[in-house]
Length: 323
Figure 1 (cartoon, rainbow, N blue to C red):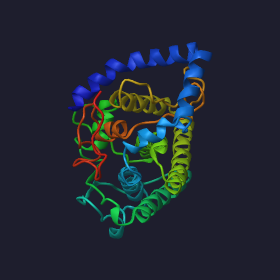
Figure 2 (figure 1 turned 135 degrees about the vertical axis):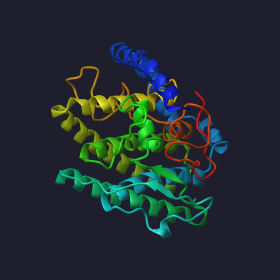
Figure 3 (figure 1 turned 30 degrees about the vertical axis):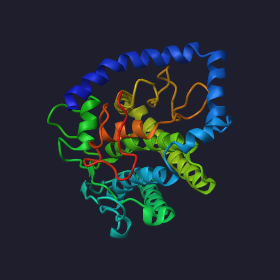
Figure 4 (figure 1 turned 90 degrees about the horizontal axis):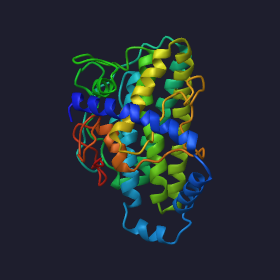
């Protein structure tokens, strides 16, 4: 899908999603709560047919390898942003075609607090890659080709920013240019990681793997909350930051399907913060692997490559969801 087509889709859906969200929060009632409660019980294993469904779904190694692809992306972005270099060579090999990283640069941080946060997250994401590779052993997939360019007008960050209406045709969005751009680049990834692990958790059958995934989910949620908090705080003085964050949220919603799974930094009332994006029951959202790939591929169709993964991800779960 072209940048122009994606932008048209976003613009057409943005107003409707905002109206639907306001309507949802105004009209949520005991009926809605009861339905959500039933869903939670099923997701937590409250029905015996969940175990049967799991036997036909992806295996635990397939799920963890899908997560490993996402961790490669996050770790490379943060590693370049903080250290100016990518992951060590011994963290890249594995099953499938090993790809190179396009782009990446050290951010000239001016705020020591943002720099400290960035370094902490970078170290966490690199540790996630190492841990998942160790847990998977010989079945760990190699790092696929990754595009995190901040200077190519056709690169992944610029394509996402253009679809969000942040930049125009031929312009670039460089997440390595300054503190604010870095935070916006991080914002693109962090919420997606949280919903990906949340969506995968009911599919994992091995309790050891499930505990590990839950631990990574918690870390990603901390990262997401941190990035959203800093962006919101900076947006008090620079409201355009919160506007851009909402536009990025709208793009993620536009490509991942008809359901409304994403939220910006403000509540229905713009004077209220929305640091933690939750449903009406205070529960974080889930995304399927296909929906996650819609976002990182920057495509609403059923495809196997694009966006941040120009040659696709490695492993069995590599096709995005049609919508």
